[in-house]
Length: 228
Image (tube, rainbow, N blue to C red; front, side):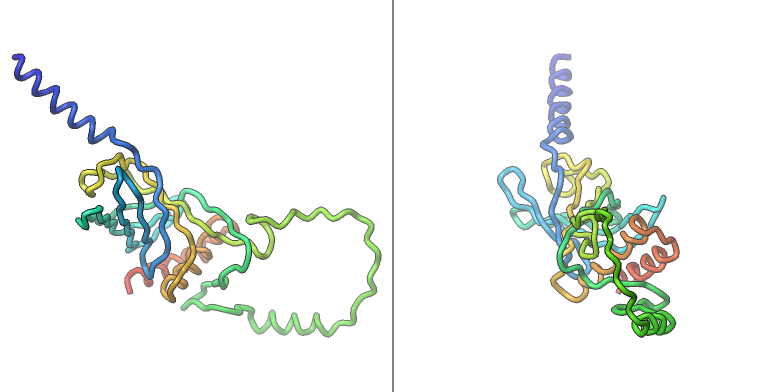
């Protein structure tokens, strides 16, 4: 009886150490072609992490990605898991030179998306004689230009919450029950730039200027990019 009790205590203790290990809170990642790539330090070692989205959806009007998560430990051992879900939790703005805005229509287009009618209207407006200026004594009430307002603001970071994961399965001796991916939108290659444009446009269509049709078109184009 004493031996059995001691054995149960050891097993319980071992399990407790695995489940209640030091928690990993967040991992910085960047766009690398079709993946989110980054890494983190834990227990004196450096780990590499890659999340490769394979499908995008908007359940409840919230962006959710599903894909393959791969972690390489300090010894070079690779552990992976498929069909990992990552849900967009929040965004952080940036200010400066924004990336090209992408207006998605059938087939998707880039650059100037003004219609011919809009261009003709703009030309007519430019031909009108200038109206005399009148002195405006009212105090300006415009919001200050910050990373959240103004024509130079755009989405700079996207924060994704991964579904609860088991550290031992992925070769990480840590609590991975609520890991956050901090995605910096700084593309370094053409594929990443395309994904960057689509993600920023999708945030606009879901949150900033809600447009269900636009969001649906962007989701289709994202999934085509993930599958190419």
